[in-house]
Image 1 (cartoon, rainbow, N blue to C red):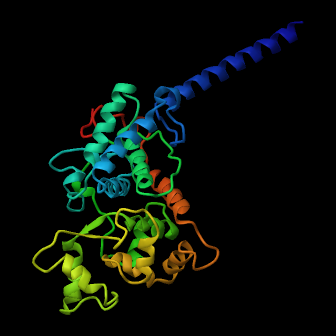
Image 2: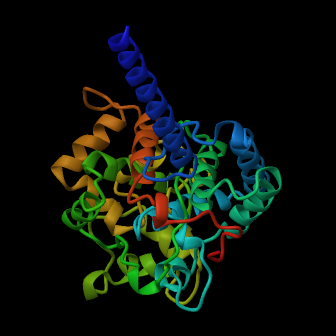
Image 3: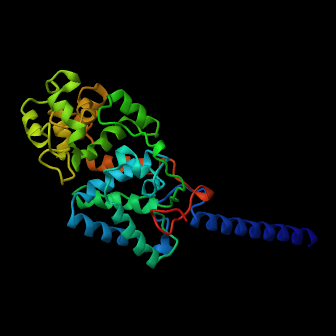
Length: 331
């Protein structure tokens, strides 16, 4: 009898301890502490998080389609500097937003509006980093792209410094692009697929003009560009004028494989895009994404996979971050 009672006592004590640990784990998980982001993270605490963000993005993209590539570019620039922590959203004289590559970013008002609505629906619950990640997915879908499930549960970073901004450049060779992506745990398939996001959006004429008028000081256009494409861009970006030019000629607002076909035809404005066709490894991936080589790859599916991978770069959890009340300032 005594032995049985002792065993029962031990069992009860064990179950109590398990329950306590589980409860503590749930509290940590609900605050984002130590756990990787996951689909459905907010659950009942903010049931309408995705529909609220989608509604705001839809309104802004419909009123100005340029907000779609703007959000996509902003998310990329955020994740490649200090990870996907919403640091790009912080305002300040020396914040990431003031760095050269970020001065032309657009869509900040989209994130702020979504944050305002979410603070009314579920205060102090949804991070700005998660809002930007969701908004980017929705922007792609509204442009005709394929949807994907977004893991949530990131926290917002507290540091944003222009001096930290060191992004892949528009003239980078393939070797440098591979190196930069690998440093962020992204492989060559991710590189080509994510660059395929240039199917929407524009580039400043200042970034491309040299290639079409005075490549490497020769006084001539880059000879690797399709000759019939040169006068079209020279007209859009003359030496003494012009502002922006489409990254994907003929399909600037539509998320599709048109850009990759243009890479194959040497009809793209950025040198970093054009050289992807010259490298054997990236060329094979482009052919597979276009269905020209087996086994083929579906661009929409692969883009979603690569976006999820990118969105998990150096995420903040636990004491590493916070949930901002306003996306442009730390608490």
